[in-house]
Length: 65
Image 1 (cartoon, one colour):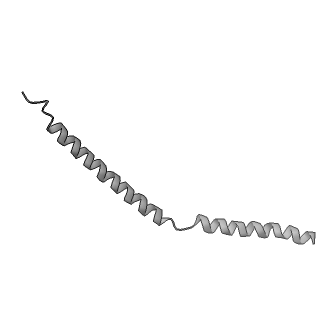
Image 2: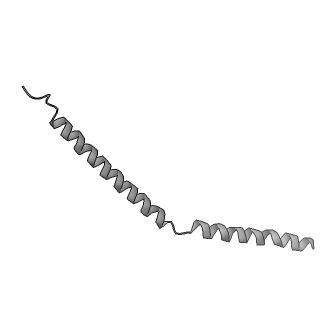
Image 3: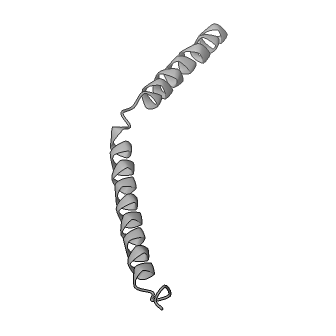
């Protein structure tokens, strides 16, 4: 009976390794797509901010005589 207990240890380790391996190899493309979409929104917001700042600087009147 003790030998069966010792054989269960590598069996449990193998099952745990299989579970971890399947989890580590999972498909993560969904996360990449949402991150890229968020980055695109960030770039659009920064472009709008630059245009607004440029318009405010052009119409500030500080360079008129």
